[in-house]
Image 1 (tube, rainbow, N blue to C red):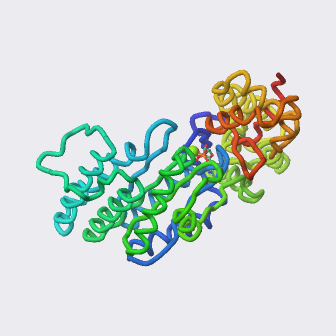
Image 2: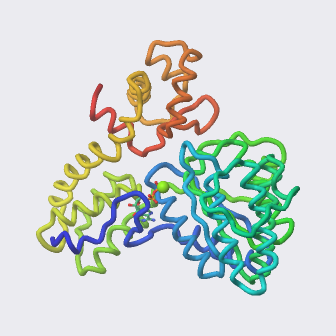
Image 3: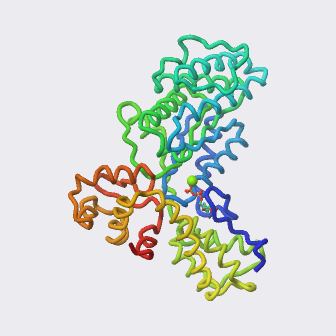
Length: 388
Ligand SMILES: Nc1ncnc2c1ncn2[C@@H]1O[C@H](COP(=O)(O)OP(=O)(O)O)[C@@H](O)[C@H]1O
Ligand SMILES: [Mg+2]
C-alpha cells in the first residue's frame, strides 16, 4: 500500500500513531502534575524499561501534559560524558529568564538568576553568554557540593515559579547515565521541593539499572518516586497498537496476520512499529494477510539486524562481543554471572572489568546482584541468528 500513508513510526522517540497500553501511567502523571502545581503533594515518576519500550515517548507525553497544566518544562537527555550541571545550567537559566518576564515573579527571578551565577562558577560551567548586570550572590548555591547547591537552585526556581503561578517540570531521559552522586542530588532536591510544597516535578526514564544510592537519597527515593515498569505491551494493547492506526486509514488486518505480529515482536513497542510499517508496505491492499506479514518478517529482521541491533554490537570490543555471545549461548536471560564465565571457560572474578565496561556502554545491566541481562529486547535471538 501507499508508503506515503504508512502510519507506523519506528524510530527512537518518535511518537507512535497510537500510544497503546500506557493509560494508567499517563493518568497518574497528569493527576500528579495537577496536584503539585496547586501546592499539593504527589510522587514524581521514573520510567524504567529496556530499549525501545517507549520511555522517551512517555516523557514527551508527560512534557505536553505538564505544559497544559501550567508548567515550564525542561527536557534533558543525559549523555555518557557530560555532567548533570552542564546539562542543567542552560535549562535552569532559560526557565528563570522566562519567569522573569512575568511581573509577579520578577523580583524572585532576579535573586534566582544571581544564585545561578554562583552555581555556574562553583561547578565551573563555562558561560556561553555572560549575564549582563547580574552579579552572583556569594554564599548561595555555590558551595561546590552538588547535593546542597542543586537543592538550593531548585528551591529558587520553585519559589519563582510559584510566584508566577506556574510550575517547573524537569524531564531526564537516559537517567542511568547520571552518576550516583548526581542522581542522589536530584533526589534530595526533589525531596526539598516536596517538603516546601513547591511546584517542581521531575520525571525520568532509563534502563532498569539499580542505582547505588545511599544515605538520605536512598530513603527519600523510595517515598518520593514511583517506578512504573515500561515493558512489552499486553496482548490487547499490542493488538490496538497495530489495529487502531490501520482502522484510521480504513485498512484491516486478518486475525492470523495480527497474531503473527504479536508473536514476532513479543509486544515490544519498537518492534510493533517496525512490523506494522513493513506489513503495510508489503500488502497490496486491505486486508493485510498472513503472507504480507511473512514478507514483513524478513524485511523487519533485516532492518533490525543491520540497524537497531548492529549499532549496539558495533560499540563493543572483540572481548566484549565474546562475552555477549556467551550470554546468548545460554538461551534467554537473565543470566548468572557465573554461568557466563563458565561458558567462556574463565574465572568470574577476572571478567568483572569486562562486564562493567559492557554495562557502562548500556548494552547489558544487572537486574539483581550476580545476574546480567540484555538491555535490548530479543538481543539474544539476534546474536544466535548471527552466530559468532
Ligand atoms: N505505547 C506504545 N504503543 C505503540 N508504540 C509505541 C508505544 N510507545 C513507544 N512506541 C514506539 O516504540 C518506539 C520506541 O520508543 P522510545 O520512546 O524511543 O523507546 P525507549 O525510549 O524506551 O527506547 C518508537 O518507534 C515509538 O513510536
Ligand atoms: Mg529513549
